Length: 135
Image (cartoon, rainbow, N blue to C red; front, side, top):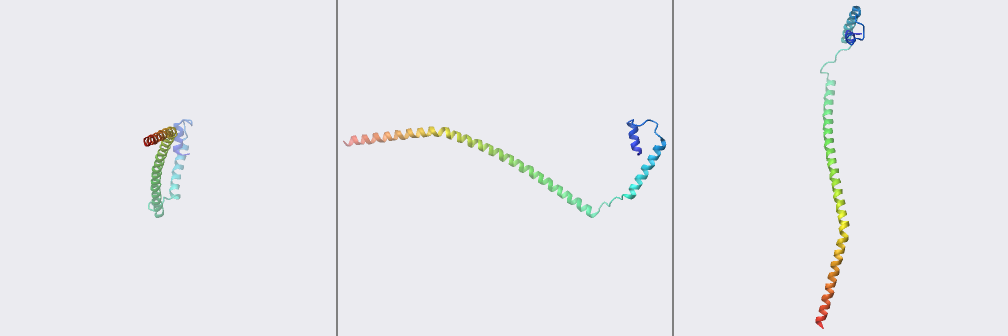
């Protein structure tokens, strides 16, 4: 148990108030020894270790490429969404045109048939009138 642990426990009132000074002293010594041992047993690596430095550079470059790909992906996703909306609108317009065509075609056919009949009648009348003139 370290001095910091004891201080935190004391502040949270988890332990009774008179804390043994021997415990505090022993804890401080143990903490100091532990720190010294760590410094000896775990030396820090040099700051400019070449493999570590090249790995850090490669990581940073990979991170930049990943960010660029994410940006491209979001742009492509936006383009796809806009294309889908355009396709949906085109389908709706096509369906509307098909509906109008199906409604109007019979009426146009009737008009065309009536026009053809009128032309045939006119043609028959003109032939009859021409035949009457010849007689």
